[in-house]
Image (cartoon, rainbow, N blue to C red; front, side, top):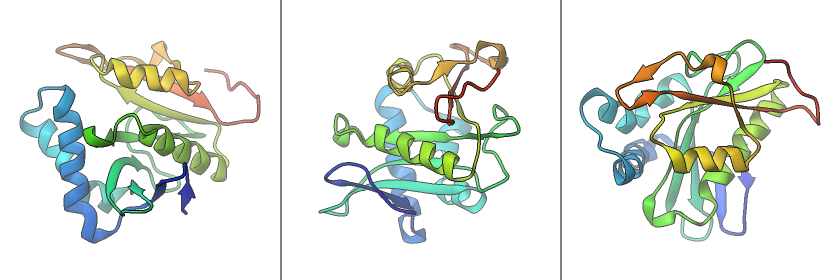
Length: 176
């Protein structure tokens, strides 16, 4: 599935020949704002590993072909993390190259995930985000996501992992 999100951003599945570049992009994006080390840094960089289990999606500049961002979505009937419940789809590792920030890349990727969830007939899109990722939280809230505090059971050294959800139905609220 392809989605032309704005005049220059194309959202599509990542190709195997892009996996290394996607991993480097994700690592660059996360390391731009946060200190990364050890297993978490390796996990962020492992785009090929994510693609082996899930759907690795990229945003590219439609004119230049440059990678701008990425997000990981589960394959139908699966999930990427423990935060999703039946009838929900989760997303993981939303990342925008620091050089492409301010172009709406993350918004395009989240809107793509919302469209995929609707296409699959699901009720809600959910995600987990570290407490320190305040810019991401602002994006999610601007896009209509709400905190699901009752699901926030995982705690890291810098605080409780935030869980967000957005209903996918046309004006229908799904009970939490």
